[in-house]
Length: 148
Image (cartoon, helix red, strand yellow):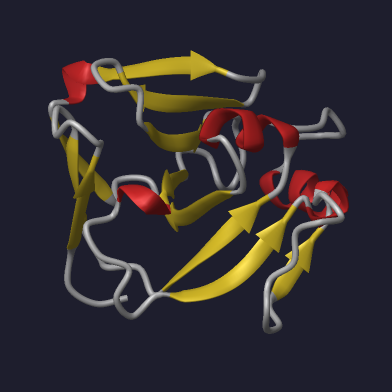
């Protein structure tokens, strides 16, 4: 990662700045992400404390599971993030909606998660790390309880 990067929602009511610019992003194929984003959710991992919000009062939060919440702009409805709330080594991590970035320049498409839920009609060129639902649950220490 290098210098900071910025982004925000469609209407501009919510803006953010990342402490370090990401170098990669990934795709999530889980049912919840498809419903939240309207398709494949492209996201980038941001560690706790790695994002500063402007217009935070315009962020709506929805607890989508016992261990995570999703955030959106209360004004325009733009999907903003998935946030891990469960205790564990990754608690507080965000997956920001990559589409909210002001620029994709220099980002590598590096990961696909919930690959076992990917619709058969979806395919991307190239190779990247792929994880199943079980792999993700183990990684975030969320137990066997499915999606977030």
